[in-house]
Length: 196
Image 1 (spheres, rainbow, N blue to C red):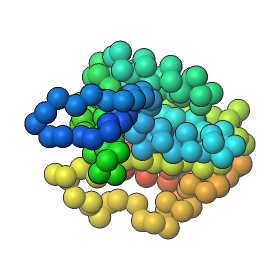
Image 2 (cartoon, rainbow, N blue to C red):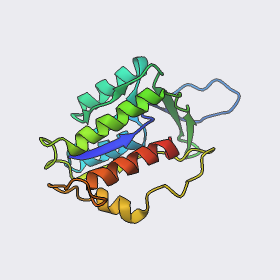
Image 3 (cartoon, rainbow, N blue to C red):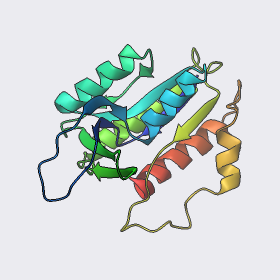
Image 4 (tube, rainbow, N blue to C red):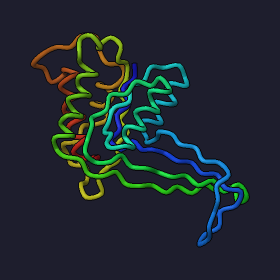
C-alpha cells in the first residue's frame, strides 16, 4: 500500500467548449466532475497502475463528501480528516478550437492547528501501526511550501527523507536517532509546519 498525503484535495470540474470566448456567454458541450488535487491524482494514477494507494488529507462540507464518494466509486482507499472548511473546487476549461486549457483554481480554506495534529496522528497510524507495517511501502507527500515561511535549518535533509520513505522497515528500534519512526515524525511535523 502507498500512502498519498496532501492537504488540499479538490472537487474537479472539467468543461469542454468548441470555442471559448472571453467576456461572452460560453456553453459547454461536455461537463465532467471528478476528484483531484495532487495527492488524489497520485492515488488515481497508482490505482490505474495496479497499486493499492490510500489517500489522506482534509475534506469538508458537501464537496468533501463528493470527493470521498468519487474515490470510493473508483475503489481508492481514503482516510481523510473531516474539517469544517469546505473542500475547494477547481475548474478546467478546454477550448477545442484553440487547443488551450485554462485552469481556475480555488485556494484551500484554512484549517485549525487541531486539524493538522489529527492529520499527523492519522498519517503516523498508517505508517507505524503494527498490523499495517508490512503493507506500507512508500509515503508520497503532496504539499506546497508556504509563501511566508521560508525553509529553516531544522528542515530534514534529503538523506533523512530517503531513509524514511522507501521502503519503510519491518522492524524499528527505540531510543535511537536512527529510529525511522522518530525521523518520520520529525520530518512530517516539520514539513506540515513549513509547507502547508
